[in-house]
Length: 402
Length: 233
Image (cartoon, rainbow over all chains, first blue to last red; front, side, top):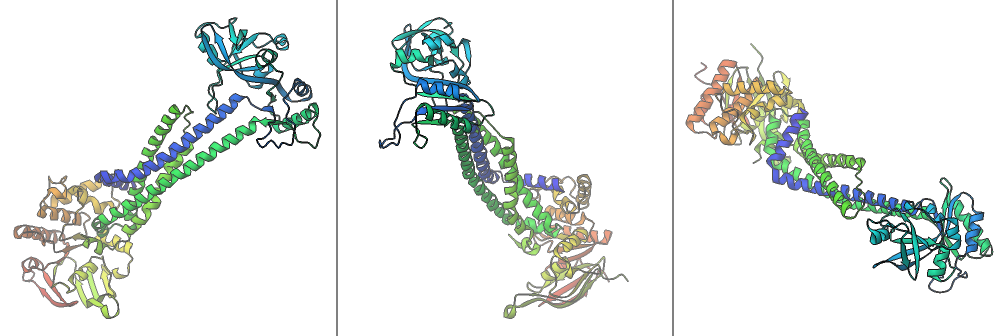
């Protein structure tokens, strides 16, 4: 009896092919929008998470505080110094690495080629702090760091530009006005979440950078990597305590540096994209509702159009529930069909978006099952009223209907 | 003697309220025995269609008792009457009332679906019923591909496929020419003679009514004449 009804509804859908298709379209667009939005959204969240992970886990970045635009600051601006770095190195517990960093964008030349790269002066702990590995060569030795030797490590973009398939190890490149020997190549990190090429870098010992490129002893930032499982909030307050000491800031005065916890930044960004995804999904869900109303409309038309058929069926012994079932199943089959097409379309759109926006394609089985269930439910809910209307018809009136 | 298959006991049927109240049936008493072939005649508004709808368990009396097979059918709810129709009553209408774009065999199977008969058994019985009305070879034609007379035969096959006790026919020849009309009447007479099928037929043509054993005439909601036809005598 049930399969009989399903077959009957498929027949009826086939007989009004164009109308069925147009009705389906509402559900197709609604489901495709929801699936597409949620899949693209979770892909974006995934991408943000990956980008944050590339920055290094449990990373805290200390920078000197900048006076705000109005100039009315409550602290005395001062750059970070060797003393601050030494204080953190000796005073902090539960940290994997402490690395002083100074950076600037400098023209790097090799033979006839040149590239404008981010030149970073730092030490051997920087790579550990950033969870960054070498694919070739070695990191700085202690003596190179201490003496500010003329050695450098290239990022993937710089290596490709200068050496292509050739071996960069031991070659000499010119960085600004000074030249240095390549001792290693960094693994590729790709583009950051902010669209910056993280591989367009050249790293050299901090002292060498300060002397030969920056021309001062300033330290732009100190990267601190906490050990796994250690609360970054605790490390943050430890850093503040130590720096108040080394920078001689009174306990009640404002600090003239800032400590940024990258874990918190990551959480904030992730929750922002999740909220965005939810909102887009909700907007898309409205179109599903519109699709449902379309189903209801067409089922009402269908019931009116087939009043005589209903009359015949009732006369020869159909019960109310038989008629109810017939139209309910028809509406459900219709919207379920729309749902399935919509899922395929939505995943297709998300797939295309994933390729063109270079984000991961992250379809979720839960979301797909939800869409199937939801579209079936829409059919039942919006099909119920028209079906009931059909089932309640008076057979005599229905038979007289032209 | 067997109890009557159909018994009207002071049956009233009224429509509307107060001043606008119209009595379609005004206290009708009537009995039809099993195996009878009865023609119901009367001008429009005489109450004959209302009587037929009550006989067919499509409608219920406002007052009085309608007993079908000794059961007070007037007090049954919609679904019970639907069950009664499905089990004991076959319908033939003036406009054939077949499902469009549905083959003859599928149309005939329809009442069996609501009886919960399995697909292969349904098909077997439908083909047999179609053979009985002389439509072998037309099983897979849709109503659009059949003539009026053939469509009415499909409708008769659909009515008898459940082997009903009663056949209710509402102007079965109303849309047909004289030759086709007489073919259909021969078919109905045959069903009455061979299977003892009780037939109640509404018509307003005297030569069609002449096929019946008995003619009941309605006028103003009452039975105005009840005559036995010569054939039965």
